[in-house]
Image (cartoon, rainbow, N blue to C red; front, top):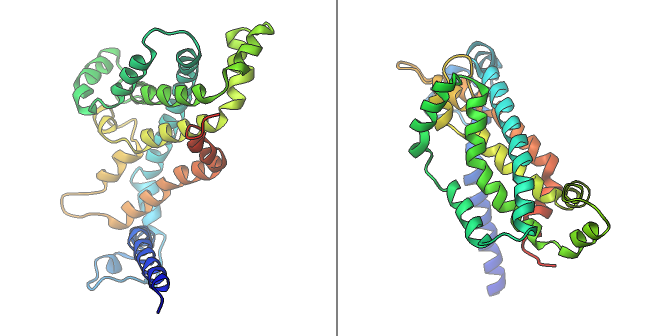
Amino acid sequence: MKSSTVVNVVTYIVAAIAVIVFAFPFYWLITTSFKFDIDIYHYPPVYIPFKFTLHNYWTGLFDLWGLQGIRDSFIISAMNTLLVLALSIPAAYALALMPVRGKSFLLSWILSQRMLPPIAVAIPFFLVWKWLGWLDTYQALVFTYTIFNLPFAIWLLAGYIEELPREIYEAALVDGASHLGVLRSVLLPLIKPSIAVTSLFTFIFSWNEFLFAVIFTREKIRPFTVVIPSLIGGHVILWGAICAVTLVGLIPEIVMVLLLQKHIVRGLTLGAIKG
């Protein structure tokens, strides 16, 4: 057997093993969400269930706040994404195209703020939101997530804008357009892919965040990430409901990736090729 054939066979085997390893948890999540309790706790495990039920979905989504959690997480993530874009696009435009002293240091400092451990500011945020009466409200999480997502969004968008030819903006300014007009009519159409990437990262961070969500919410607001641990009781763990709510909670992220996939691919490669 030729060495190239051996290499190909080994490559396919390794790839198949990798696919199985990474796909199995998702398969187990799906099957467990449809299993009866007797199959969930059965030993040896039931890998291919022959009986299916929707009871876990009803229990997790309607009886145990799962649907409310997904709704609250979607509202918070959507509002945070829109607010981050509204603030980061003008800031990135100014940093990338206007003469700013110490621009490289400023961008590095902005990015470093994203590296701040959330636990380090959890208590100060809690005291501020309590003083404002914002605990257990949407705005507490929206503004907290905005503060954390904004540095990364500005840094990412500024890098994309700097890769575009400056002549485009200079020509528009010479023709009499204001900076706001250039931003609205020239810049936004050109950086749609980078906006898609920024939106996706911002949305996913807000959707998956747990620490601030569990600290700043009580009963009125129950984000998706807070609902899941609440299904783990002292005497019983509702694995079926947990898997059902988790599976439904993945749908918004998957839909967002599918809707933006064309722009995401372009956005991820835009900054890698200059000119």
